[in-house]
Length: 414
Image (cartoon, rainbow, N blue to C red; front, side, top):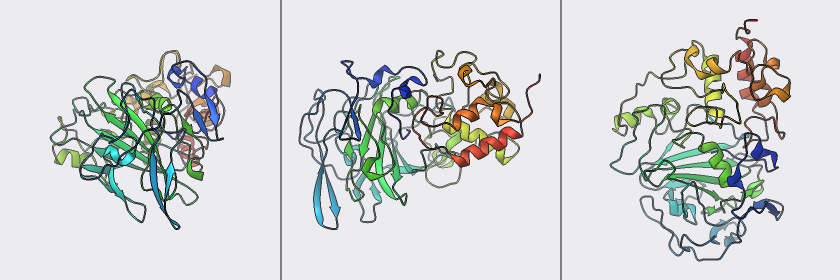
């Protein structure tokens, strides 16, 4: 998921309207305490239990039933002055995804970890494993930790190597680490497969209220928090998470064949194959096409940072990017650069949704100044920026890669 930094009204309109971001009653968002955007009904209070022991669980002892509008939870923190309590207010509440229902009130109750060590690391619950993608999503410099839990005795359906079907009960978490030294755990997000249906996924976001918090508290689903816990990291609302993750039917953006085929550490494609966790084998020879590292890095960057929306499964609505659409997600079967959607639909192809920019080509070979894709990557805090949400700082390293790659492409045939 993305770290959302923008709250002005154009954010939801940049790629089409997002009615899920408003309340059920249609009441517009309001801001409280200068940092939290809230929507929906006010919270009701309820007691929260704790969960310890091996193995993930979704039960939250003492929480209200699924019909409750929200729950106020308490997270214990340990600081130099002793133990204190940090009580949730406007952020806490029921977390519902597409058909997600209620999520546990505390992160530990989702089954990610059993305790947080004195050095700040999480002691993972049984069956939870760390992984990382080959190509990272830019999140304004925040570091990230990713974890997955696959229920025992299950396999990932890999009959379509580009769109894995995760077994029911699968959980994926992503933690964001920010702060001046990039060492403060601020937010952890959860995606859980809760049923066999196409939309049977639950999304939830948990807030680490202080650097020494021992647990993270559930955010109310329609809320977002800016500069969370005194850092520059912004926590998105649930509808914003859905906006990115619903662009792919599998919902898990970085847990895929191309992204896991590496030896960077953690759970990877080779391990999944060795342990028989895939229904259909996938060759370890797959990767980003290209004869040179620059090309592979450029395609990989666009795949990770743009392809989650710019794809056809289901991707963006046609009213946002009129046909012919631009597909920037690389597929396992793309053996050459010419096979990729990037080359077929972006390189030296005319724009269909950027006429206001005065730039005619999506990517103009040999000249980044004539390329709408590159131009929009350089923009922030205005409607033209790409990605449209989740970032308020440009990625200089990523821009350098794309700029150098474009400079080596042949120009369009006039």
